[in-house]
Length: 137
Image 1 (cartoon, rainbow, N blue to C red):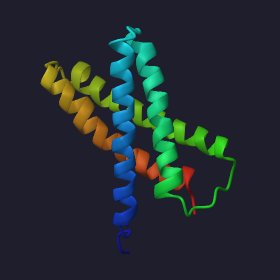
Image 2 (image 1 turned 120 degrees about the vertical axis):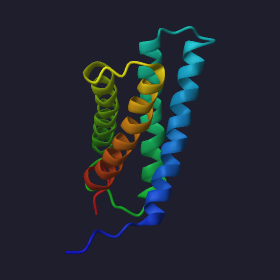
Image 3 (image 1 turned 180 degrees about the vertical axis):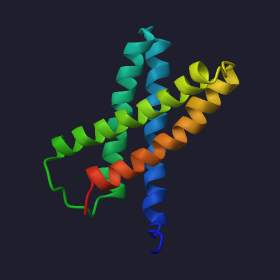
Image 4 (image 1 turned 90 degrees about the horizontal axis):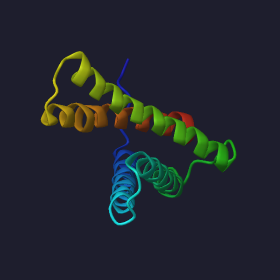
């Protein structure tokens, strides 16, 4: 049995869209928290929704533009949003296990577990979910 072939073009496009979505999320969060003085949870919720929307649009109009939608775009976005929420939960779980389960409580350990290990695992989940559940062939 051979390993699945990697489509580097798809992977690169998915990554570029992800970077754009991350930057949109970050910029909106900083703006809402800073000059507009929103509370952190409301700011993060709005920024997360904006980041998901940027990622969906980028993937629908770029990475997977040649994939014909099997369902309505609204339903497709709903599944995409659910996949992204699952990715966020993976990041939180990595942070919780490291911080509370393993007792690694330094800021550096939190960054590694949540923003490096968690982000890497969440990105794998998001890539799999986006290509198999949202933009199916």
